[in-house]
Amino acid sequence: MRRTVRGIPAVHGIPAPHPARRSRAALGTLTAAGTLLALLLPTGSAAAAPQNSHRSPTPQTTPGSFWTADRMRAAVPLDLAAPAQHSPATAVPRSAPLKVSPTLPKVASPASLLPGTLPQAGGPWTGGGAVTKTTGRVFFTYQGRTASCSGDAVTSSNKSTVLTAGHCVKLGGAWHTNWVFVPGYHDGEAPYGKWPAAKTLSTPQWTASEDINYDVGAAVVAPLDGKKLTDAVGGQGLSFNSGYSKAMYAFGFPAAAPYDGSKLIYCSGTTFKDPLFSTDHGLSCNMTGGSSGGPWFTSFDEKTGTGLQTSVNSFGYQFLPDTMFGPYFGDDAKNLYTTAQSS
Figure 1 (cartoon, one colour):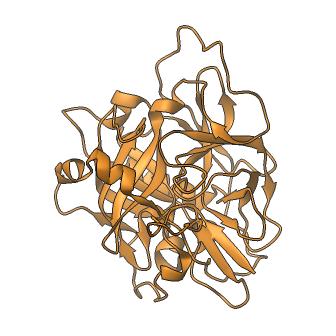
Figure 2 (figure 1 turned 60 degrees about the horizontal axis):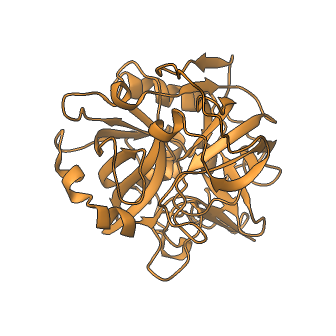
């Protein structure tokens, strides 16, 4: 049995798996939505007393210059091996629902041509709107390789918070370096700039044991040209503890075939709860490596491109094609968001 996750770079010429975690005999292998082959992922355990965040050495503008158009195009999607073993009966802690509204300028005239209504198993987003600015590619260095994931700018008190997958900030016990967020990425171009992370964070469960149920990460990006991130591109809303079986839209920048990472791709449909080895949401979706960390929205408005983020692209099972899974945003995801926006 083999699973897949969506997020690290793949070796050139070899298809990359989805972001998953280390192999476990009881669970089989999982692959991530990035670009790194599961077989190449480290198998060592995380440190005994892991830190849930990582600060960049300086507020740095260096990562922005490091990520040239050619490097961004060549970055491999990051993929995970297999999730840490856990009891399927263990539920992700949750409490009362919490919603945070988007902070975006109003759209004067909604787009007349929309990509279509639910469901959509995967295709280019042509509807325009705020999502084309808030969603972007994430680039970083992992084990000496240039890698890519996806991410989303969200409403936050510091106006500088990006949500992504946990394996897109830390994997195999090591925090990624040269981490930047490129909102509105398109074919090597960064129309709204390259925003370097001053700090990256993840849930305690992902930091300690890379538990796939808690594959959520965040970054606090440094100001760019005197501006803060959501002042420049806006921020999507959020929803925590919102339940299962919801109409959702998922976005990302898949970079493994048949996609090439050059454009924003989306899927939509009614989600279901993973009946196998996680407590994640499932969605019919053909996105591939590199889409890891891209946002899932409830209450998504196709006319304005705004919604409430309630998950991220995380992993897929190899024996269950064209299906994506994303972690349930419960109390731990909410705490991560609270910590990030307070940084």
